[in-house]
Length: 132
Ligand SMILES: [Zn+2]
Image (tube, rainbow, N blue to C red; front, side, top):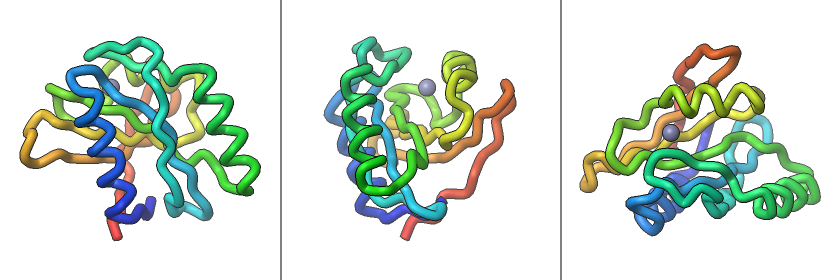
């Protein structure tokens, strides 16, 4: 997936803002390129898990649809662990296998990392993130 550096910065800023809790949100896209980052509330307000707040989810999905764009990715943060899907993340993705999953890790606070994964049928495959 192609994504502008500015959008990656938005995700990292959101992760820092919510730390030590996980942040979450959605990324809109067109033809495999990210177009916009939508921050959402983490309904769990937890350092270990995330659930996109249902009200935010409806609002964001409506906005993305109105713009004629797609839900390209779901993002969340790991404040202490690497940017790799946890078993919790894999289980959660079972209900929603279409979007990619972006994970922003703040494990090294000076070098946040953002990686993208396809999580389908319990399997995890890293997807190249082309930051432009
Ligand atoms: Zn996670």
